[in-house]
Image (cartoon, rainbow, N blue to C red; front, top):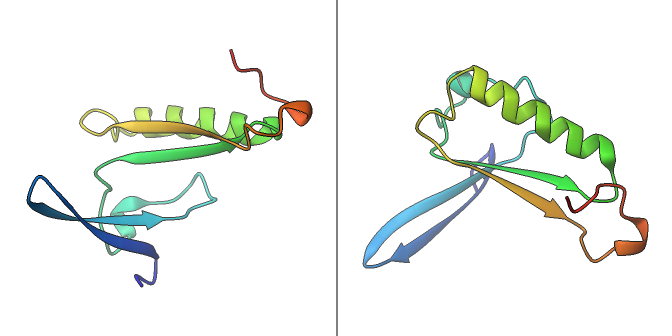
Length: 93
């Protein structure tokens, strides 16, 4: 296991790649200081039952955009806990 997260090797169309997951709860994470360098893509996860987590993801996307990370890298935004419809605090809109 990678000390900064978890990694898994996958083979897709005969080409092997490593997916490394770096968990960061800080919006001030400096990718240039990390041993793995700047990620090839970003996955930002928020909880639909926690509106502040949605707002943090919004701010993270803005920061990543302003710092130029999203010019050549994709960002995937994932809604978590969608099965808890009764407790939903973030609109599906």
